[in-house]
Image (cartoon, rainbow, N blue to C red; front, side):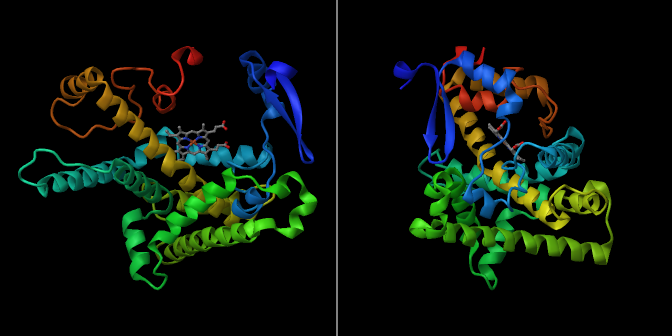
Length: 331
Ligand code: HEM
């Protein structure tokens, strides 16, 4: 279509107009020079039912609420200061993870010197354990096992709910384009979205009630031991967020961050491992740097605040994208 209509043109998607851009100069014009105009996001039926009506800031329209919510996440969860308070937690989780891998090695067939590991689920559990602990103070694997034993008998339901969330928010619904068809709920998708939204909220509500009960019995506790939900409970007592009550903001931010973090981090780690395995020279260089320069005495290494190994400018995004697109696109 670009050959026929040029590098920028619009199309009608039902009642909405969309712009198609196919040159980097125009993409830069839209996303850099005029970024404020394009900063907001389209509305959708899925976002309405699954993101607490846009209280999850990854889906909120550009404006005061989005700015405040983003600042809360940046300062209270992702800042260097907060990450430093989670240092012991990271070390504990990585140690437990390495131990598990070592135990699998111990159980391997004695005729072989290799053990096959399924990294997707192993790294998925590591990142879920970390993110759950930081946000709601629970290790995911234990929480899932508890749910399996408990009355709900649905250890997979949270994983299933997360998958449904990704599918619905990334999917296409005819009534987003033609709103007057909404009442028909073609294919029953809106009904399913409401169910998934309820499942997300039930879980988050349970965590929030637990956190409130703990406060009643034990007081606020010290900053170093607080998870993100605890921190938000303190802040939202005094700080008002436009458009939403404090419980909704707390649940929405916690669920948003868990959903945003779990697959991105584990997929990035899988890419790193795949790249290292396929580039043995860089793997050797990284091992050498770790052994000789960074941790000569087998001390635990915390990479937070430390430049990358082998490439001082490497960032997770670069690792993730570089195998797919030619390097000149990033220069
Ligand atoms: C290697 C790992 C990750 C990659 C590659 C990644 C990538 C991205 C990208 C491309 C965006 C869209 C940015 C934009 O629209 O401007 C984004 C947004 C976001 N990410 Fe990540 N992410 C990663 C890890 C995480 C983690 C660990 C968290 C949370 C702890 C997180 C939370 C979010 C949130 C909340 C947003 C929405 C931000 C907003 O709307 O303001 N991400 N991420």
